[in-house]
Amino acid sequence: MSMLAGATLLAGTLMGTGPARAADVPAEFGTDWHDPVTAAPPVERPHGKSCEVTVARAQFRDFTPYRGRYAPPDGCGGRWSKVVLRLDGEVKGRQYDRLGYLHVGGVEIFRTSTPQPSPEGIEWSVEKDVTRYSDTFRGPGDVEMLIGNVVDDTYTGVLDVKVTLTFYQGRTDGEAPDRVLTLDEDSNLTTPRNSERVLAEVYATGSGGGCEEYWYLTVPEPAPYSCKAGQGPYREVRISVDGRLAGIAAPFPAVWTGGWSNPFLWYVVPGPRAFDIKPITYDLTPFAGLLNDGRPHRVEVSVAGVPQGQAGWSTPVNVLVWQDGRRERVTGKLTVHRAGDLTNSSTYTPGPQHRVDTEGAHRLTVAGYVDTSHGRVTTTVSRSLAHTSAHRWTDGETSDALEAAWSDDESVTAGGRTARTHRTFTMDGTTTLGAGDRLRTVLTLGDRATTVEWRGRRRIAWSRLDDTYTGDATYTANVPRDQRHAVGTTSERYRAHGSRGCYDRTVTTEQGVLTRVRDRC
Image (cartoon, rainbow, N blue to C red; front, side, top):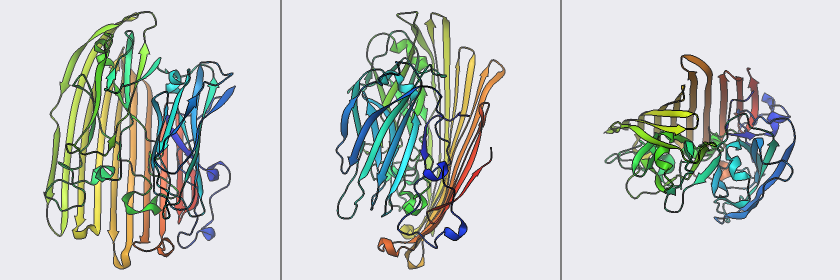
């Protein structure tokens, strides 16, 4: 079964050898640990003829992008039932986590971060279903890939990666878009004049090593904390068309593999989405009538909550377009635009344990119609965001804790069908620096979503995802690596149930050793 689009991290243990016995688990981390692994399922691959193309092969030592050329596969036609991207990487020595992207023909098809290596070296692989970019793959194009890195006498890890695309001949089971577009240098978009469905996807990441990498922990003035940002931690990724708000979304609180001051949490099991930075998707179909006039329209992405002039977010945009093959021009009109007032309140309470409590919420409803060859189609998109968090810390930040939740509810109705999605992201963690500079982090992360599709009053499909990570790791800070005496346990349970089947797997580690793999479906 497969109802899970996106990327999957693979590991040799889950594909062959079993987990270690209790007797094989060391008392603390050593100089090597298990290759990265996740509980998520591999990308399902169809049977039949396939062709493989190497897109990039590079060693990243600095911030110089890899540049090459892509050519379509020879011998697999121009229509594919599935296209699967695979990244294989190696690194050893010492290195931070790094962010990376891959562009083909100017389209961002993959965004990722990297694991931190052991001195003896690790290997990892990531797979992603990229069938929706088939339009891009049908013609030749430039390739650009970058995983920005620093290699010197201290940080010795060179990132050696290879990326391939495997094409499976046949017709896709889903609806791949007819066109995949990007914005020009002035953030302008020109769509085909017969567009009847328009989606935008934004690979939004807060990063760059500054406070926006940990935006969910930022506080407002006058709170005495190391990361201050405007009104506090509320963030909202917005997209606008010609200056009018067209979509809102809650960003996922991604934690990279050095996050929460404790790399021992992530050496084997990364946090949800760390190696698969999923794009935020916005349905812009209510604006199709406006966009179809043959002129360029300004499409801009902004992140609400970031202080004026402060950097730290990357927001590349792809636009996916479905066309009406029986008409040269599809006309239409935006009929409803109703934006609620933004609620964003952070309250600082001083004391032996400082505290910032935050509440945020926003609503947006847009509707419009297009007159297609198969009749008038009205699309209504409603989105409702909410965020609550309690951030508590002591002087010197020797104890730092956050409990936070984000919800992102979306309803799209078009052509007699309605899809409702309820997304919930959660973060509950505490970092404590105790006696002897022993630093301990206890953290739970949740990535959950429920989607139900209706035709009239009849439910036609449903799915439920629950990806939960838990970790508890301790080490001695401010000493050389071989004196850290680190211990840690981590676990991930990935559950996906729905009308297309069931998947349920748990992986558990101790001191960098994979100790348990449990399947329940």
